[in-house]
Amino acid sequence: MLKFLKAFPLVCALALTAAPVAAETLGLGRAALSDEIAAWDIDVRPDGLGLPEGSGDVWTGEEVFVEKCAACHGDFGEAVGRWPVLAGGQGTLERENPVKTIGSYWPYLSTVFDYVNRAMPFGEAQSLTPDEVYAITAYLLYVNDLVDEDFELSHENFLDVEMPNTANFYMDDRAETELPVFSGEVCMTDCKDSVEITMRAAVLDVTPEEDVVAEEPVAEEAVPAEEAEVVVAAIDPALIEAGEGAFRQCRACHEVGEGASNRTGPALNGVLGHTIGGVEGFRYSNTFKDAAEAGEVWEAESLAAFLADPRGTRSGTKMTFRGVRSEEEATALIAYIESLATE
Image (tube, rainbow, N blue to C red; front, side, top):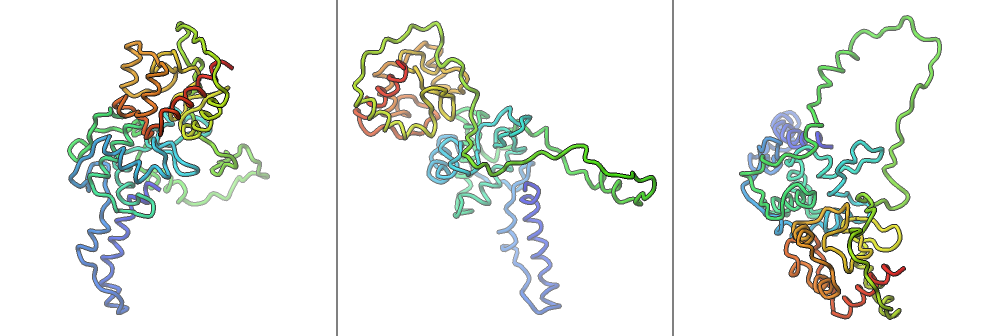
């Protein structure tokens, strides 16, 4: 696919430049105008050739991504349904079922920019401005932990970004290595009397029957062991039930209950009374890392404030959730999460 996308503009350009010949011999069409050829020639190469002038920062990219891309790819690139996952997957390429994302697999940043610029958003291809494409690309780098939250991408620093998997790609050398071997005279002597199968190709299950979500490693302990145990008073069952219903809007990113693990967001079991940003195995943004280093603890009041206004309370958080609709909803959510710590 990558080779096809890179070769596509050249194929189109060759077809268009061949138009005069067709017009002379068949009486069809006309020579393509230079502006028409330029409209097709929009590819961006790994060496930066074709990059338009412009720039975009992470937070602008988040706003554009949520508006234009999140319906298919999720707020954090975690994917919705069977649409492609864009973030995570680091360290999975050697597994039987690798998670191939921008951060784990893609070879060049130009591949990201070129594809977004050429084919996205779905159904509205090439409707984004260069600045919007730069901003979206910056945000995709951020959710893959490749840049910091204050990063701004532009045509000037584009080549400074090196993708983690670049070294594992190489130029297609089959014309020099394989073609000569298979183009020689065919040997038809000393053939085996029988044919046997010595190994089998792996089965590629690209269409799972069940929904599969790429998960981060399971946190063995959701909270540091040395912290004091939280004593939970009896909670109104009706409030817990209301909180369970409200938690449906959180399930896309967070898990709770038995066997909960980190997903796009950390597992929330036993969060009250424990260190902010303290769930093991989860990659936190800098604002939560700072809170953990300072020894800040989640209390009902601080958690309610965060649920009401995540970005306003924790500037720099990756969580794009708009915030709960009321104080009552926050109270119910906290009651539900708190009740799980007592089970």
